[in-house]
Length: 182
Image 1: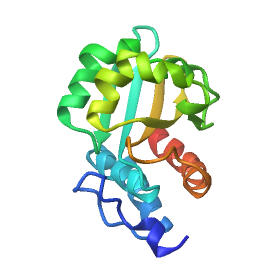
Image 2: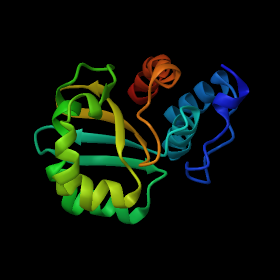
Image 3: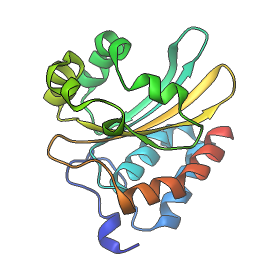
């Protein structure tokens, strides 16, 4: 990895730590396992490592279908509120997150028909006005009832994550899994 790949993106939350190496990012992820207060920083550093805009880590209780924990970075508090209150129940990407193989990253643009984006309120009234557009996500763990999901979100003016960015996420997957398991 080059130093430029680890420079925090301008679009990422300002509080993202300046992690400039893969080892530094792994250290932060495992520190978050000991101190959950650091989960937001570890998520922000992951988002910055792939030059995305925002990220979310959500733990859902399958039986109730409700989030029992959510950590977000790079999105506005109002976007987080709107998602929970109005748009989460109509998120067309959720079915892929809940059914994809554990640890396998999926990209919404590969599953969501392009015409849906132009006419569906989830995109037009929620995601795009908050400058979010593309999602790359994984079901990071599934212990029967609790399910952990990570979403990495690119902005409207960005492209979906590809190539090196996906490779970074794939390399980080077992570490995120282990840290969340701890």
